[in-house]
Image 1 (tube, rainbow over the protein chains, first blue to last red):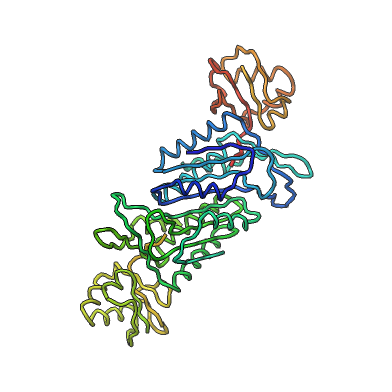
Image 2: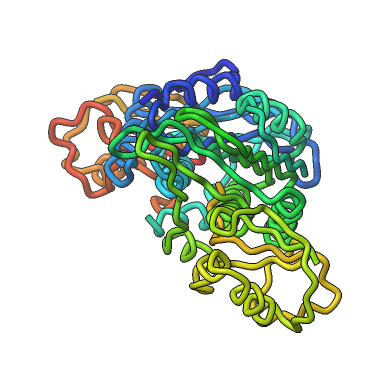
Length: 147
Length: 147
Length: 81
Length: 81
C-alpha cells in the first residue's frame, strides 16, 4: 500500500506501470485518474487545493485500510496533489489490484467516494472574476451511503 | 473510440498514457487491465484464447457504442488479445474517459461485464494434465442483469 | 451456407468450418440435419442449452430463420475479458 | 490547545491556527467561547451545519469531549478527489 500527498505533479502512466508490475498474482488492475476540468462555461485559470497536513495522510490510510478489510485486494495506491493546478493537470489517482475484477472495481470506487468527502482537502476555483470555494455536493455525500 | 483485437502483447501503461493525453476536457479516466492469473492451486502453463475473427470486432464495437449511449463519455478504448498467453501477461484492457467519475466507472464495468459474456472469445487453460475449456460462470451471466 | 464451430464444438466436430447446402428454415432445423449426419455432430449438439449461435456474426436464437443468412456459427458460452 | 482553521473558515477568522486556553468541556462549548470573542469568529461559526470538526486529526462531532485533546480543527465539508 502506498499513499502520497504531494504538491508536485505525478506521472500517471509510470505509476500505473510500476503498480501493475508489482501486482504479481493479481488478475485485475483498476486505475482512476482525476483531471482538473475547466468550468462548463470555461474561464478556469487554476484550481487551488488546500489540505490538512498530517491528518490527510492518516485519513487516506484509514480509508485504504477499510477497503482492504472489505475486499480481497492485492495492493492499493493513492496519490493526491495539493497546491495550484491548471486545467488538464492530473489531481489524483487511485489504483487497486485484486484477484477478481469485481473487488478491484468496488475498492477503487469506494476509495474515490471516500476521498471526495472524508479526506481533508478543499478545492478553490480561480477565475478572472475571483476565487470561489467549491461546495461539497449532496450527490458526493449520498455516494457514501451505498457502501 | 479505438478497438483492437490482436495476438501481440500491448503496453498497458503506454496505452493508458496516450489515452489520457487525448482525453482533453475529461475529468475522470478509468482503466481496467486483466492479467492471466495462475490457477489457485498453481500449475497453469498457458491460457489459450480462441476468438471469432470478424464477429469479435463487431461485437466489441456494439458494446462500446451501447456504453456511449448510456453514459456521457469522452472516449473508449478496448484492447483484447487472443492466442497463447502465460501467467502474468496482460490479456486485455479497457479505458474510459468522462467528465464525471460515475460515468467513467460505470462504463468501464459495463464494458467488462459484456466483454466477459458477449464477445466471442473462449479461454482454454493448459496444464501438465492437459487442456481444459474455461466454463462460463453463472456469476458472469448474472453480472449483465444489473445494466 | 458457411457453418463455423468454435472452442469445444470445433473440437468435437473436428473442423473449424464447412460449407453445406441446407433447406432448413431455422437454426433448430439446421441442427436437426447436422445431428442426423454423424455421431460427432450428435455429440456436439447434444445439449443446446450449452450452446450459443451467431447468424452472420450476430448473436441469435435457435428458432431464428435462416432465410438470407450466409454464415452460421456454433460455440459454447463466451469467456472473454 | 491548538486550534486550526481551513478553507473559508481560515479566511473568515484570518489565521490558519492559534493556541488558546480553554475550560470548555466539549467542542460545542469551545465554539461558544470563540463566537463570543469577536465578530469574525461569530461569522465563521454562524452555521455549524456547514462545518466539520476534527479532534487530534480524526473527524468528530460537536458534542465530543475535549479532555486530553491537543488539536482541534474546524473546516467546511471536504472536497477532495
